[in-house]
Length: 362
Image 1 (cartoon, rainbow, N blue to C red):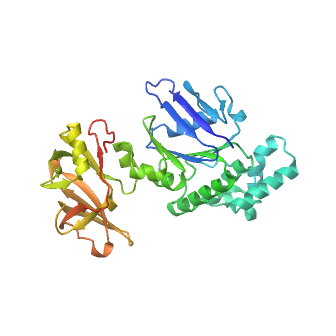
Image 2 (image 1 turned 60 degrees about the vertical axis):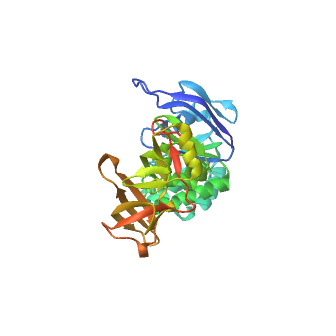
Image 3 (image 1 turned 90 degrees about the vertical axis):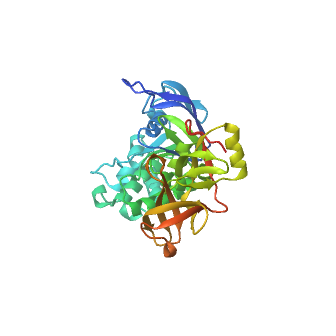
């Protein structure tokens, strides 16, 4: 096990005029499970490949266990990769796949078998050791790929979207197994995904990237409760946070023909900035349907999920129109085309962002 440090790590692909990873700084603790998340092209996979030695570091450095990895080949970094496509040998059994790296190292057959059987027990693969990959389900193949990494007992696990090829139900099940397994092994893990739900449920800390730049690196609850900017606010959470830019008025902001009221301290912050417009963020569960007060909206869609419902609405029209999503009780949810009012829950948090830079104001 080892700590990992990215020090202004930068990568640019040949022929490109844009940095794939731009001055990335991360300090990952020994035994920590860190998730790199972001949209396509954000640089998350490149950052992982730089750690694994599969991409060159053009500027800066990456350290593993306090040792600079610049120029160190992948095979000498003591890292195990788990890929999206499993990369199993179809002509070898599960046991042979899991123990192949040890065989190449010259590990004796008895010791190989012992390590493979130990990993198989952890991963619930004991009964499949003599099967070929073609006889396994997608989730079982992914666990074999995990087992191949585990038997090596590396300093670091690098996982590049390992659950992308699984169906939704199996993905939930497998991500739970991976998170539990990592905590049991205590191996430092860097996990890449574009799925923010995976990131929030698996990571001790999450690094959000956009365009090669780090936006925020924090625990999942901090990302959710205090996003550093409007991008993180809109990316983290499902359904996404309501984000809209509105004109500042005396006691809040104008939404359609109504005023969305803000707390006194938030009004003071806006007065201090001198802004005439502000980007407001509020999560769906922090809005409630009401008969009076709040903002008048028209219902566009109701998603009934059984235990809860999400009401998609709009206020106003044209360029000044605002779309808002609120969570409510499915038994009392409004109907399509109803006109209702939405107000902030008494304990609901409102986030304010600069409309140009997107940086947090409160």
